[in-house]
Length: 342
Image (tube, rainbow, N blue to C red):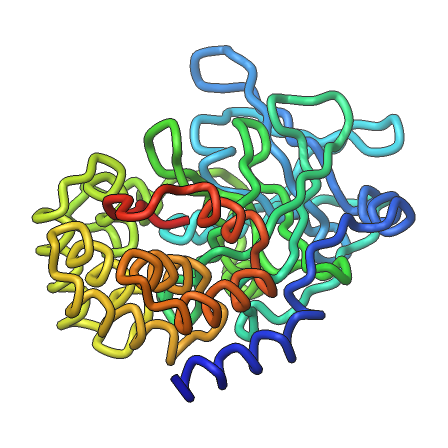
């Protein structure tokens, strides 16, 4: 119980970082001056659109898949249309940097995408659904997935087609990522590539043509995608044996990854291996005291086992991090079978 008390203390100490708050209108207004809507003409003669943002003088970041089938690209700024004169592309990570001449927009400020904390408030500004004006969406960091010396960021904020390439900001308005893709299904997850990859792409060699050289990692054959992508469909379909197999292999390959422990525990819990599940949920929570999904799972187990002491501790953690999760726990009936994460 001492470990849980320590986790509770750490969560409460970090509550100011995790507090959810709408960004101020002034902050959003200033940031909109860094956002552009990208218009494309496709190889079939159709129209496409996406979002982008200024990362340095005359440089605009967006997702490469926004440009993938384009034969013409431009952005509008202050009543004028601008066409890029060069592109720097990291197709694998789906990060492209367009270079313009005399683009009259200021750059956004980068934050540190390597020191993020679960449940921290975030927001994004872009053009979901091809909106005429930039729109703001808010959410929280729900997961960080280790990949290529950085972390892909999953947030609770959804986004639509047209929002690809939108900057993901921390609560101070600093860029920590870029809205990029979602998992399949009605209850899909929403992912953002990290600012570290964007900054790296700014130093790549430049070409004067958009030439696709690779598929993005998230569009690879399923077996070649990262484990954190492979687990989503079996989890949503409640195919627990399949999830167990994938999570077990993930845990072998990355024994210190708290997300590997979490999905292994989730499979074990739903297969009736409660004690093994508790062990792995606790491993996850020891590595990441802000891991809400593990806290919620342990609270459910404590409730179903009528362990009021642990239930109280876990409920306190949820109250500090995610009151909606606590409300969902309070509304459920005891002995609810499993859960599908957040």
